[in-house]
Length: 526
Image 1 (spheres, rainbow, N blue to C red):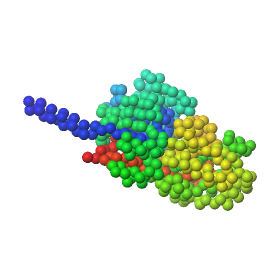
Image 2 (spheres, helix red, strand yellow):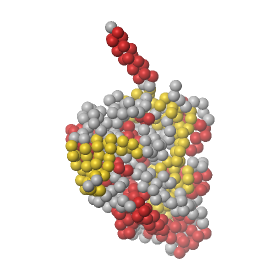
Image 3 (cartoon, rainbow, N blue to C red):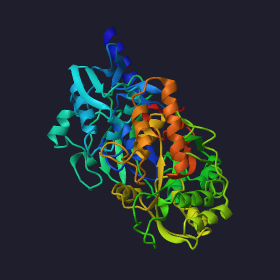
Image 4 (spheres, helix red, strand yellow):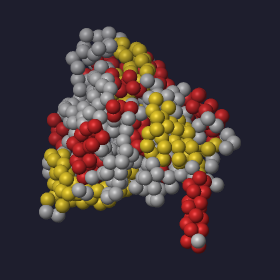
């Protein structure tokens, strides 16, 4: 009887403790995940959703520190610097009950290397992935790769059995608009499982009570309801009315208002993301220009654009101080960042107009600028400011601002002459930027280089910095590469983005510089 009483008391205590934290959190931001296929898109909001469902071998916590996920340890083999060993966490199950093994890790890394995967640029050095035993994986790289673990923080692990059952062994071809079972359904090992999914409307997640980390993290959210709301005013109204509890990416014009609203607080910090403009400088003729050549191919035109855009005015008038004007497209978090290179060139309209005349475009030209209107903070408003600024040097800009799903799909098909893009660096190293944005566009490198820029030396340096283990030599390579692209003015930097998350004041949850909320860390204050 005594033992039974103790048992009942313990069970009731556990139930009461669980009930105390069995709380729904309603979360909103401007944009939904583009897909639930974990390897189809290397894109921030998509990763934010997938991090709730899936696990990675290694992840970055709310302080952006590397932490063990499905790998409990990782190291280079003593006898071969080209082989990374990952020890896989035992006793982990997928949401549908499949046991995690090394085979699932091998399958996922190989799947992410497929030509349709937008993650393959992170894995270009991999020659082979193999299971040594049930819980040990070896990744063989083409020469040493000191950055491999850094490249895996958004590389989600799938169940091979589930993928084969639903005929999704290869990633969705997002650029082609392919629809597969993995686009709307998911089976991960993460802290939350998908209960229902209506893309761009509402996704409901339930806490995974079988999560391997259930006792390691607060895990206080029992139900997570994600409702993307495109309209900034509507998002703010939803928080003020209590319809949502946490607003990610607070509109800059509402930061002060929300910070002073009863029952609401702001959490703020710098984001690991730079906003910039890209141009097609490689084509013989632009698609949307009223010229029969390509003005962007002339460096003088690109310099004129850079001199005409006033980043400080954008910071003050558009961002209301919530940005840091940029001179390079690497945020300060990143290895290779240079304060001198990030210094913003003051606007100089006289010199800009001289450069336009020298390049043969003294009378200007017309071109279309493509921007998202629901991806970055005040993205459309930034582009509107750019339109006005470029008009002062004779460039008439037709602005097309549209939802990010259309923007990125058309960009991926190489359809833009002039466009806005933002870039974060989860590896915290410049190699990631060069690999995706500056390397000559190829099947597995330069996959987000839609500029047509191609420089043999930059390509050599990009490949070399991925395998160089001598820190001094490697940093010299990075510095040289930055000098080349900075002088070429391949992209037009606007600013490093700042983050504000607004939430109920009884929530304890800090901003994460990757703008990825790991909700397993969120706590409710009594």
